[in-house]
Length: 388
Ligand SMILES: Cc1cc2nc3c(=O)[nH]c(=O)nc-3n(C[C@H](O)[C@H](O)[C@H](O)COP(=O)(O)OP(=O)(O)OC[C@H]3O[C@@H](n4cnc5c(N)ncnc54)[C@H](O)[C@@H]3O)c2cc1C
Image (cartoon, rainbow, N blue to C red; front, side, top):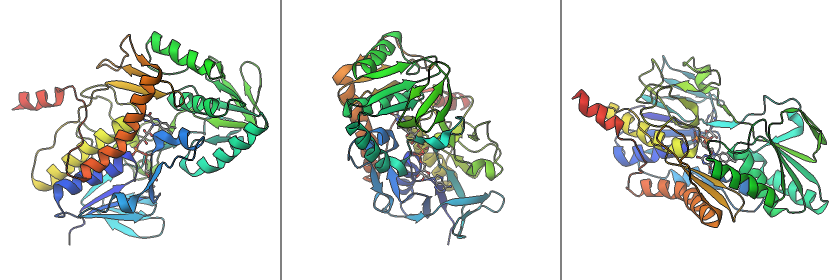
């Protein structure tokens, strides 16, 4: 029996890759997806899960119940690229012909002094955080969100909208938001203020204490501190001896294969491609799913005698929720810079909600036989045509 394809990670990238390969291979090559979590978690909705009882997780065994796919619940402890095997923490060994790494990221708390007094927006703490926020709201307590990128902005807005009695502060070493036009930035900042968020920009956090946050300005009282200062990549690629960058992202070639390892593909937050054919590739489900679909196509091509192609993606839009009733939809240029205008307000909130729903719909659609599609620049196809 063939060893087939092994996928590590059951997030946006892993699930998309598994379903697309299953559709194309039709049970001819076994596909195994191993994930540390037995549910697919809609990470882009984590800030909603700490303020409402919205369910954001879906059983992987159910999502992956398609011809040719086996789901294994377990954490990969090590990978031996030479032997083409992965070993789980349980001791189980899994052999592969092709490996897809999609173990993603977690919120990075390592860069903050006193992180043990803070919480990160991770899937396993949502119900605890929800209960704490509810109890703090009754006592008119205070919350500080550290980090003004999109994760911090969305979390601060959601908390302030749902719990208007809480004092919510968003503190960031730069400006709030990222890669926004001036108009979108002004709207985003103004909306945070309207929701009651105290926005403290260009202020660095020195340390988190049990009841306060120490900054380069004044100390801020904080009953609950949430850290949203960027992501930390899974170390499975680095530990396997693959070429990684300074934050453990696996360096990939244009086909999304780990450099020097033709049998290992990488998709989602774990992958780092320095020379994109299209737009620069930021972390996000909006890149994880296209990369995974492309990896699936290349893996299938490599197993069936087809031709692998370079990945191409176009960053068309940045979508930000500001609570349930406002948002920003920022159209982007191909080089990753923002266009000068943006859609804002309730219409933008509706578009963002549609896009969040669309991620899960896309997986269901792929499962039903319709291929997931994404915007490209067309350069990959042009290059292939020029080569001949
Ligand atoms: C609050 C918040 C809001 C966000 N909003 C947006 C947004 O609006 N738009 C956007 O594009 N992006 C957004 N993101 C980012 C987005 O969620 C990530 O970029 C996306 O989840 C990456 O997908 P992934 O499949 O690479 O990794 P993940 O979704 O992180 O999935 C990784 C999977 O790997 C598993 N795993 C990890 N280690 C192992 C191991 N050793 N063995 C086996 N399994 C393992 C995990 O259990 C998980 O199932 C947001 C993130 C957060 C936290």
